[in-house]
Image (cartoon, rainbow, N blue to C red; front, side):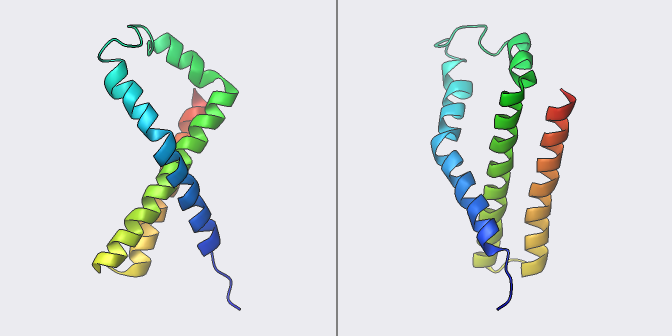
Length: 115
């Protein structure tokens, strides 16, 4: 039986989908509505507070996992959409989508380590 990476890719897709469904709407609400409308106060996302949050090791891990899973979810969804529409070559689409997710993951990790 040939070995496949499909279970790994599906688990990343499912985990990213879970985050996209449950946490992303909260993030969008807070950053897009609650803060601009003044519901949470003026100083919630002040630079000093966000820098202190991003320097916390647990917060760094959370941010890395959040970005990592959302990128891989988006990459898999985009790849399957391209496949369903019959656009491009299957290997090229997979390489482009997952390669971009990998570069984004590496960039997020690098930025979080450097903070």
